[in-house]
Figure 1: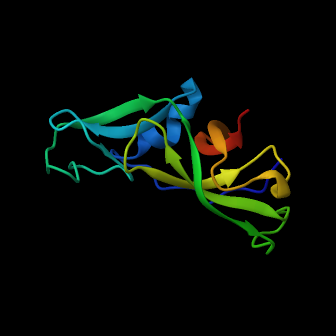
Figure 2: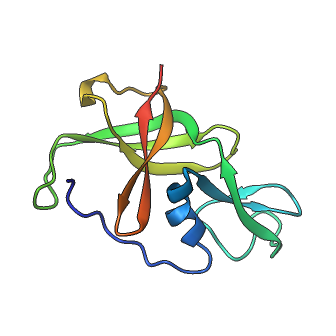
Length: 134
């Protein structure tokens, strides 16, 4: 088992994001008025300030926009090296997730790689991680 990840504090705005993986869903807040996505989740749309927002399941695919390989074992039991990446989500303009790329040797991960979400569950939280596709 992987060492525990930092546990987010769940609230009304972010619970759908952190628990959607139980149903295999990557939930990103979308505005019902202007149609724009907002992440991290907020009580108001960051584009038009509307309160008409709710979680929306997205495809969970994307492209590695930028990345780094970490060699520092920051936590006991943490295996290094590992990839920290920013993923630009397909169909969700302007939304990027900072995450880990898993299930590939670090030397095989590169800018522009296509990826898809996989979830790692720890104590009811479903952390969205990504793996290479194709």
